[in-house]
Length: 303
Image (cartoon, rainbow, N blue to C red):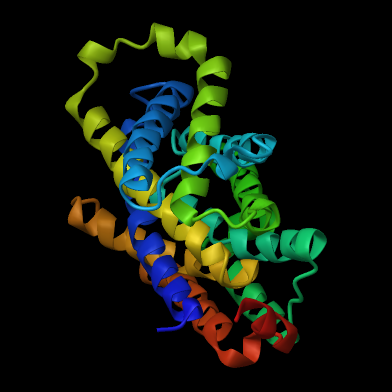
């Protein structure tokens, strides 16, 4: 199995795991301050990934070189997660997941600026189709809302978090100096945790941790273990073997996974018209995974 194939499998798993954080996140977003939740999330994930690193690759001293790299990456992901939970206070899970699918086109721009990764016409077309499908879902298939460009406050907040996520993706490849994905993830999570503790200390101190509803603890451990520890490593691995736009292309599957989560939680399915947008995002994913969508120079670089 080639590194590229493993990268695609990593992102397929990533999209399935991260989708759960939208449905569970919407249930806990109004129960605990986002800064407090995510500080705990990063701390738990850092302990888990640190243990995995010690048991596998170890934590070489060379990984501690230029610690500012982890501060940048941890800061970007901290911004993403905090704004995600701020947005989920008012944005429906499927709508938030649709905003997330705008990340590939932003990642393609960031990938060109930071790494000069080329977006072919085929990839650009796929990104455009995916973005159109995402907007269709965000506006809930409402032509009147689309014409008036009425976007909810939650979606706007989360959009800026997705912009931070898009920058994070090419920055991993730019700043990695040969460290294994699990070691690099550990450094990023420790830095992100420290940033959140310092910035969100008042919220952390004010949180009544012993009397939080059970759903908050369920959501916290899910996002810490599955939507953080596992997905961080998967994302780190994939970004070292695939172009940024292709890595983030898998976010197009997120609304589909979220719909499955929502149905499993008894929240029903979206209307048929909204499903048109979901289908468009899936088509965009298929197009981006076609060999025609990958520049020859990039293919050589990633082998």
